Structures are given as structure tokens and as C-alpha cells.
Image 1 (cartoon, rainbow, N blue to C red):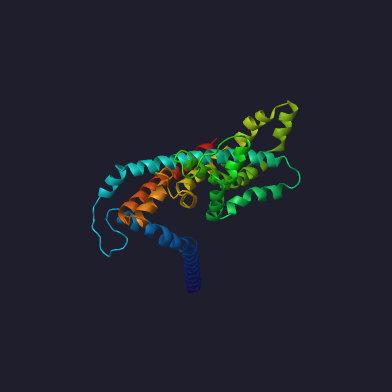
Image 2 (cartoon, rainbow, N blue to C red):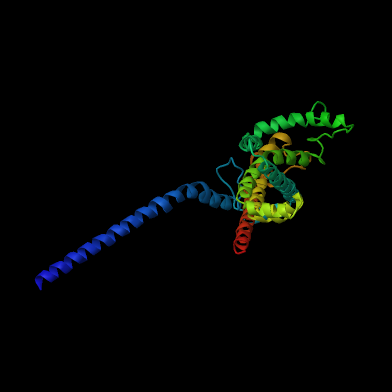
Length: 310
């Protein structure tokens, strides 16, 4: 009996030791894989987000050590401001005017590149180069190209007898000019995603359509577009979010002008925060931008689930 008790106690101790070891491993894994990655997110995202939200209820001028709590007055002032609604309109126009052409050009370039048997990687690298080029440097070059007197674009139009506009100083064309620069930079980025999606399409589909004598448009409509629909959805949402955050090209090319025709929500935030020194209203604008971005991100997840269930 005593021997059996000793054996039972030894088994219990061994089992307890294994349980403690498993708990220790789980706790270590929790620290390494969950807690540590959350620290940068907490420091650089959650805490600034909370601070910005609290500042949006104040009249802090970014300089004084004191401020007053004004409650929801900043939100009322912003939502009743013509400058805000103009900036929101410009942001939406800029988003549509850059996302749609970017997706179209990226999609078409990926299809054309897929036809090449040699030099495909070289062409992809060449088209992707604008994406890795700093936006500020690229915008400076484009500002010279948009000059009405000696700019390359207007000189090219003059060859066909067309008198080019004052791209960056005319309120009717300034936003279009910024869109052109943005589309030129981001099309190659979309092209890479589309090229990867196209490379995964079964070749049997193309062979079947070739046997039926299908046209190029039929292949695009019935093969390329359906098989890259998820990629298109992903790129559309990410590009829209990036368009909300566009700043560098607007700052270099137009500085939000003329007459606010290129002032987006992010540039409105910059002007309120660092030109008017009204950090309370500036952070109010950022909170509205966060809500818009969150809606777009939620829309992406909902649509992805719908596509995944098909």
C-alpha cells in the first residue's frame, strides 16, 4: 500500500510539474507573440489616438501650456464650416479620380505584361519604379512639367495645336494635375498585384476560350475580371484609404490652392494645426478622417467575406 501511495504521489508531482511547464510555455508565448507586438501599437497608435480624441474637445493652440475645454463646439464648427465640406468634396473627387484610373491602368498593364515571354520582370521593375520614388522629389519634377510657359506637357500639346492651361494655378485644372501625378505613381504598384493574381489563373481557361475563337474583350470580361475580383476589391479599398492620406504632392504642387480647390481633409488638418495653430479643431478633422477610414476598412472586410463565401 505504501509503495502504491508513493507511486501515486510521484505521478501527481510529475503531472503537476508538466502542467506548470505547459502554463509557463503558454505564458511565455503570450508575452512574446501578443504582448510585445502590442507595445508599439499601444505607444504609437492607441495612446496618440486617445490623446487626439481628448484634444478635439479643447481649444489648445499648440503653443500655450494651458487650454480650455469647449466640449463638442469644435465638431459643430467643423461640420458647419464651408472649408470642411469643400475639403471633403475635394477628398472624394481626388479619391475617385485617382483610384479608378489607377486600377484600370494597373489592370491593363498587368494583362499586357502577361503576354511577354521574356523581359517580363524587367518591364515590371521599370513600371514599378515610380512607386518607390519619393513623392516630394517626383512632385518637384512634375511641377516643372506643368509649367505653362516651358513645361513639357504644354509644349507637347502645342505640337497638336492645343493651348495648354495653367495647370497648377487654375482652380479648374489644379486638382486634375495632382490626380495625374498620383495615378502615375501608384499604377505600377497596382500592376504588381494584378500580375500576381493573373499568374494564378489556370491556363486551361485561356486554351478553352482560344478554341472557341473568343476575342480579347471576352477574355477580359469572362476570365481576367472575375478571377481578379478579390484583388480589385483589396486595391480599391487600400487606394481609397491612401487617397485620404495624400499630402506630399498637394503640398509641393499647389499648397491646397488655388482658392482651396486642392485642399483635402489632411491638408485642412495641416493648415489648422500648423498655420492657424488651432490644434483642437485640427484634431477634430483627424477624428472625422479616422471614422471615414474605419468605414472603408469595415466595408472591405464585409465585401471580402461575401466574396470568400462564393
